[in-house]
Structure formats: structure tokens, C-alpha cells
View 1 (tube, rainbow, N blue to C red):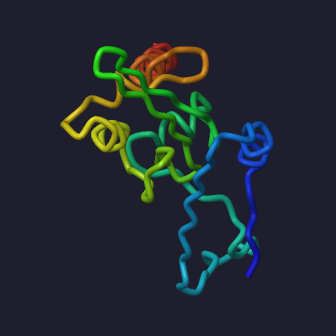
View 2 (cartoon, rainbow, N blue to C red):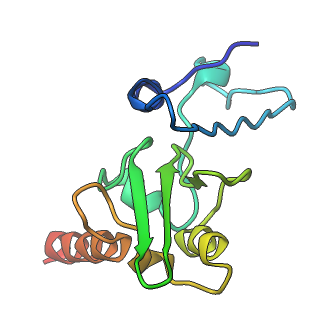
Length: 143
């Protein structure tokens, strides 16, 4: 068995301060890997993103390893999440990856939350803004 880490994870670990706790979630898929017929890349092949973030990843508006932030100043809540190659969010301090931005936000707030407007990229854009950009790009391509 071998473990492969994305370079962004290594950079994040290297940047952590001595007082900072870094949480790493490791999920083991113990089922045998079988490459699709005609695919010789085997278990190390690229993972196809699925779920609500899939299109943003496929179009390059999000990348695996991107760090998203979440702040609700009045409620005193903040969180950080990492985008995975398969389209999930790993929220710092949580033990399971979330399949949607809203599920990840709800895990932080404890109530139903719209993660599309709460999670922000490093440049401050919401996931909803990225989704709108994707829709605009698709409309422009059809015109």
C-alpha cells in the first residue's frame, strides 16, 4: 500500500505554525481497485469529481486542494475546508468529508445553512459566485 499526498497538502502542513493543530482525515478504500477496460493507469488514475462541486472542478473554477473559508462574525463561527479531487469538502476539525457545501456549512453552524453563499475562496468569491460564472460562461459559449 502506498499513500500519495497532493503538493498543496504538503505546503499546508509546512506552513502550519508550531502552536497550530493540523487535522488529517484518511479514508481507506479496502476494496480491490479495477481499472476500466482499456485503462492501464490502475489504482493511481485520476478521480472524477462528483456531486454539486463537480462542474466547478471540471471547468477549473475550483481545484483539488483549494482552501475555502467560512466566517459568521456575529455568531463567532469560522471554519476552513479543503476541496478534494472527488468534489467533497473536508472541514478542518471534522472527521468526515461532506458531499455538498451546504452540508459542510451545516456541520459548522449546527443548523441548516446555505454553503454556496457562506464558503469563500482565497480571493473572497463565494461558491455561488463561481457557480454563476460557470452559468454565464456556458451561456456565452452557446450564443
